[in-house]
Image (cartoon, rainbow, N blue to C red; front, side, top):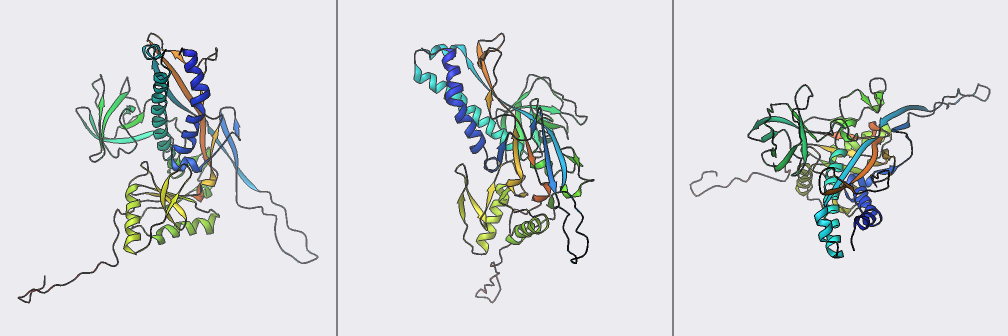
Length: 406
């Protein structure tokens, strides 16, 4: 006999471990490369000492000179709030009762819900990794008849619930808008809403209730904000990451230049490259133009990708079209209060009836923040052209029977 207690037991003892593994390892190739730790978590914050430079107590001298002066290691303290990450499933009382005498139907019911939860959570976790913590999805270019034209749509997907903010950072909708269609060719999203909204150019879109509450991804490292993890980049210029924004074609030299700069100047060894699919195609075109074999490697989580001198080059939908990131993932840690857990009530129950409705919901939660110990050890190359010049392409002049050149 299937009951609520049976469902709770399955969610706790069967599905939780599987879901946690899928979200930690298989949600995104970059996330799979980042270590996760409960270290340096103090209450609701991450407080972490980040060293920079070297110990200054070294020197040389004669056998009768004074010994070198001591100089301790240099540190700054990173401070960041843990972010609250949620995933929610819902089961109707009718569905539970209908499967009460059919364990197979009950398993299918739970499996479908958990699969949907993993898919939604994986999408949003991957998106946050490349965001700046603000939760910004896109900026509005125009709006007509519940169709919004945006600057980009790679951060959005059908079924997502979003909020709209005006240029004064005031939310204009009362209830979240549901995205029903994303036109990835024309950069438009079609939404459902019972409200009549005035949405204008330069308004911004965010996941429902998430504005300012997401983890600090790569966007934070490469943002123009002066402060990162509570530390001023003006006061500590070594925090500034390597950037290149001159319009250019992709090449091994372009990539190696950034890798060499980080290696020689900040002792950072790049082990992961992320780019858009557009940039990856351009890189494949470049390799083909120079008649080079394209090396394929398998990453943790089963991801297959091409490589640059043994460094994986991964295409991710959340990277802007003209952009490539070169990262030392050893510098990143996802600090967490605990791994994924079910939100429990005082009675220990995780399935709770939704007030006034014949449905039950359970919420998966994780309190975490992403910290990069060495922001200066990461690189971003932007304005990469989507095509490359083929050095082997030549113009062939063909003369016809009349002696004219075609």
